[in-house]
Image 1 (cartoon, rainbow, N blue to C red):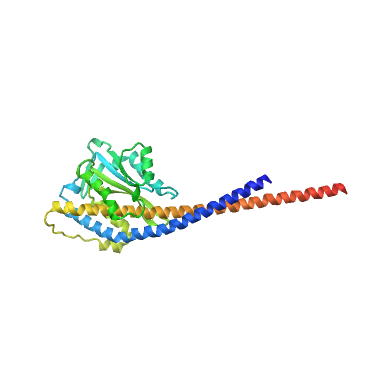
Image 2 (image 1 turned 90 degrees about the horizontal axis):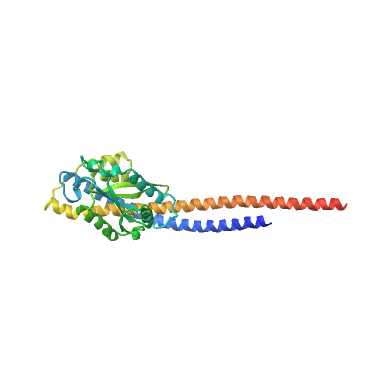
Amino acid sequence: MANLKDIRRRIKSINNTAKITRAMEMVSAAKMRRATEAALAIRDYARAAWDILTNLSRAFENYNYGLLEVRPVEKVLMVVITSNRGLCGSFNSQILKKIREQLENPRSLAINRVGDKKIESPGNKKPDIDFIAVGRKGESLLRKLNRNIIATFPELTYLPKIETVRPLARIIIDEYLQKNYDKVVIVYTDFVSPLLQEAKIRQLLPVSKLDLEKQIADIEGSSREKTREKKFIVEYKVEPSPRKVLTHIFPRLIEMQIYHAILESNASKESARMMAMRNATDAAKEIAEDLTLTHNKIRQMKITQEISEISAGRVALE
């Protein structure tokens, strides 16, 4: 009987857990809708901003100044976007895997590409990598790896406004202009669908036409018609001077890149959490069903045993 009591206690506990995970799934679904709406709403604006940035980088391809300056890569700044909490499936683990790959093999980070230019770090030297953490999970891992974190932004992990992203963008731009870093990359999760999210690493600075075109392609998908629509070059007449254009327009466009990456990560995070809670609920129900079946079998065996004992006792009395 003690065994049956333990099983009944486990069934009750698992059913209570299933109720909790079901409630968490519903909350995550509501958050996911808001996050995906925000990410999808900004995509058209982000694509237009990146089109402008791509055409400007093409127009200023030979203009080696400011955010377009290409130099040998000795120090890299990596912006890592994760969540503050767990229970979101493989969302954080994908990002952490991407970071470990870059730390184990940093040669790809040691190459700067802008247009046809390709500049590698001198003497095949591995670049030093510093980090900015957006989200506590990424910060926790980086501290365990004894990596240098120059800033953290845990408050940006859920539906930020563009104004709240500007301090992060300002740090990135200032550090690059002051030549403290020769390259800035961002690691985030791109929202493809509620069932699929992809960890991406993109170059922020120096402004790279190649990476911008990849980001535009990610938004537009693999549609050939859309690709043909974008195969044109816009000629800009720059006034009053290229230096002033770079000073005023490029920082706003860099802000948009960061803002879009955070919104994509938020949508991916809530989608991953919703699916994780749904899988946990389904698993709890399956375990409860298996335990119920086991409980009924044991109970049936005990009843059968008691009937057999009663029958045997009656035969003995006769």
